[in-house]
Length: 338
Ligand code: AMP
Ligand code: MG
Image (cartoon, rainbow, N blue to C red; front, side):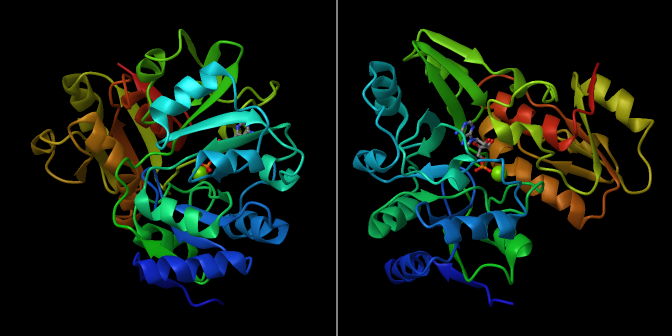
């Protein structure tokens, strides 16, 4: 059993983490989206540790993180289309992952044997400084146990992975709180495979043709090929059964009040909690604050011992679509529209 240290993200500690990575070990790192579990993208043993530690299915590929456009040369030969350049000029560094044709040297373990590789250039200063000092791309899936809500604080990472990782760099609470938007480019078409803080409307400001992948609001069709393999797995779930209620607040109340009981909780927007006497949590008022809080609240449901939770659905516009998508998956598509 490894001793797990939570390290303040000082320059010295960042350099210590670079040593762990060069040794083929993994470390927990902050990014602006969620905490990542980082490893050298070109060290097969280190990458294998990530799958083992997280319990991640091996057919779910990893995102490679860069801190400089020159690092793209390790990963792909296809970085010159005007669509790719326009999109990355606008949204990199930031919470956007682009799927690109992969170069021969990219490990099959990283790309889950696909012909493509997922790339992101994070904006978080600690993540960038770590990748810069390391000098090569790092893979960094979310630093949770597979299936659990993604971690947005160093303590969330510690609670999931203590004894399994040597170090977690503590960069405070993640600014965005939801994983990156994942897009695929085909000709002049941008397809959103996973929604995130870079919204469909934001993408439309630089690309004429933006569509939403089938899996964003629907369960994975078991007979279809997964374009974004991660979508076919159960995700983000607390132990409680989550029911997502897409309705007005008054319909939410009518539906939920009859169904409350021991260990049954409801999660509403800030300011709505007064309507319930007990077993109520709030997850923010603006879409940005709901995004920051949603994974903490899903973890909180476990802490309070909830058996069932009725979750008020956010609006589906802007970053709201990404929150809605995560809650649909956390509920196993247990959606009630009123
Ligand atoms: P995570 O790192 O846990 O946030 O998950 C990464 C997401 O990116 C998963 O949903 C993966 O399926 C997706 N992804 C990574 N690489 C590829 C790829 N080459 N093609 C399509 N989706 C990918
Ligand atoms: Mg994840």
